[in-house]
Image (cartoon, rainbow, N blue to C red; front, top):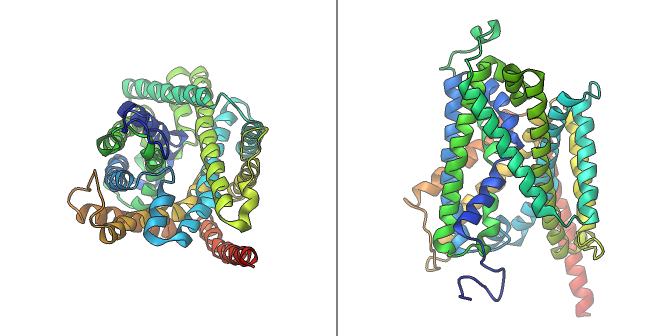
Amino acid sequence: MSASDQNSTGPSQILSLGDATAIIVGLIIGAGIFKAPSTVAGASGGEAAMVACWIAGGVLSFIGAMCYAELATAYPSVGGEYHFIGRAFGRRPAFFYAWARMTVIVAGSIAVFAFVFGDYCARLFSLGEHSSPIYAVLIVVILTVVNIVGLKAGKTTQNVFTALLVLGLVIVLSVGLTMEPGAPTAAAQAAPSANSWSGIGLAMIFVLFTYGGWNDGAYISAEVRHRERNMSRALFLSIGLVTTLYVLVNLAYVNGLGFSAVAKSDAVAADLLARAWGVAGEKLISVLVALATLTSINGSMIVGARSNYALGREWPLLRWLGHWDEASSSPRNAYVVQAAIALALVGLGTIQRKGFQTLVDFTAPVFWTFFLLTGVSLFVLRARNPDAPRPYRVPLYPLTPAIFVASCAYMLYSSLAYTGAGAMVGVGILAAGAIVMLFGMRGAKADSEVKAG
């Protein structure tokens, strides 16, 4: 076996270009494409602005992928962004990133997708006024228990649900683009013109949330064969495919329902299929989306619990998170804590009465803070290690990464300026990490003094 295929000191390099591309596409495409288009349409104010937002989301993701491709090929590690931030800025900022993943980013994503699951399940069988949060709570509890028990068929489960997700998108595309355009309603005629560009910042928060996941491709960088060329290719191919798919899906929604109906829908894919095939169509897509949403929730739970476990292993104050249960072969404590945080966030979304939107608000400022920090780390590491091998170099440096950093800064501003209480809660939880880190460092110092004594 060649050195390219096997790394004797770390993870095996076994993923081909096709494997890596498929994984990243799977990371990007989630249940958000069945929910976010309504919010984007309402915020953008017109069809042209809405389509432009989805195209811009792909372009910005592509620019960001260039920056990540350089970092991932120059510093390949299963630690991904945690590794890049640690190398550039040290242990403390890396702790904040791990804390943010545990308390906001991953737990928030679990709660967001749980609400999408609840919205579509409510179309199948209503449990009353609070159907969506009830279903959200149930699925978080059930999947947490399943993972704690130690599910062995995780890969097969993920593949099946991903296939269902893609099937749902294919159905939406086929139906929405071929049916007669939806008749404009009175509300549609009174809607802002297609040239209205108000609310673009808010719209882009939800667009880029739906594109989210490509950055997690950095976590497989150490396992890609010939990563010097294949890691960047996998990122670019996957984003190109997803951008094309997302733009077409949104055009299908608008063609089939009309712009105003898309903006007002709480389950846009179900509404589209209901118009085409009646109740049977609504039920079919609701089943597919509800099942496919499990991919996003389960995948987030698996990676989130393991990053929480790693945090507990490195910081003595959180060592209880670093317990690995041998019987179930799972980080049981990390799963329990993750579920508790996600359930609390479901409660927050229920109180605000806008579950999906509130929880995207909650995650957005923290997410963009660390995206911004990762972009800046490219400049820092270029200056600090100018002679380090860089199999892939960002073209037009420093202009390209500067555009990425500026975009992240704008999205951070937008997520604070255009969002509500959810955003402030997320920022507050991140600030609480400073207190935890302070005590954690004191604990580590005390442990070292005891050992020295």
